[in-house]
Length: 160
Image (cartoon, rainbow, N blue to C red; front, side):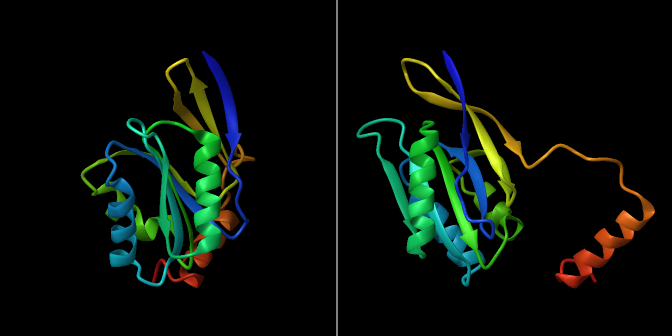
């Protein structure tokens, strides 16, 4: 078995969700869940089919994000994995809708941070072992850090 890291390639202003599913209709169900939950969100999705023709299936409403999704899916190449890249919304806006799709087996990460995917490859194929999301902590939150967090969440409209 070979173990490698795959760096997610994306613009800084783009967020993404990485997950695993189990059925060819995943790509259509993900698309529908996003547009029904956050209609203004711009997104691209790619899904690594794991049997039959074993294609990278894709969808979305933003050509740039669709291309980013396809490129990252090919780089990861893990069976039944999917990636959703988005603008004009955040993962938390669609995460529950994505998790509630019956064929979605799990979510590895939902982030805007730089990320690396740890992938194992055998003769059969590739699988995701885990995710390195962002950087390691630089210290413990202080009272001024708490105040800054509190103010930031209210500034962006996530808390009253």
